[in-house]
Length: 71
Image 1 (spheres, one colour):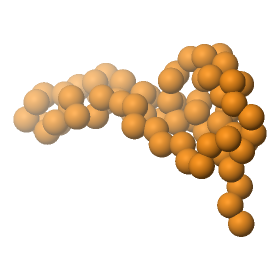
Image 2 (cartoon, one colour):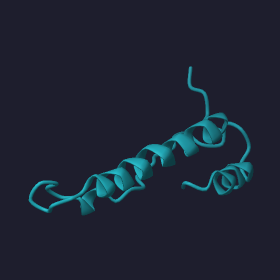
Image 3 (cartoon, helix red, strand yellow):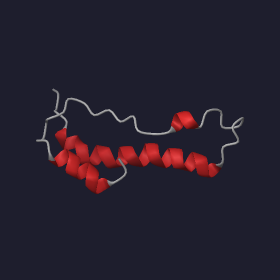
Image 4 (cartoon, one colour):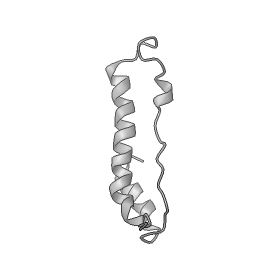
């Protein structure tokens, strides 16, 4: 998900308007649990935020032409 070239290659296999929806569930947020009780560090949190945010920022701009326009 974070390899923009791989994401582009994935979407290139499909014509514009091919998908009805794109759902992105990638991430490890379940591993954080209770941040205080599990003694998670800022580095732990940064990994989670970067994975969730940047994966979506990679998928959305590259995939939006492939999502069917509903009117």
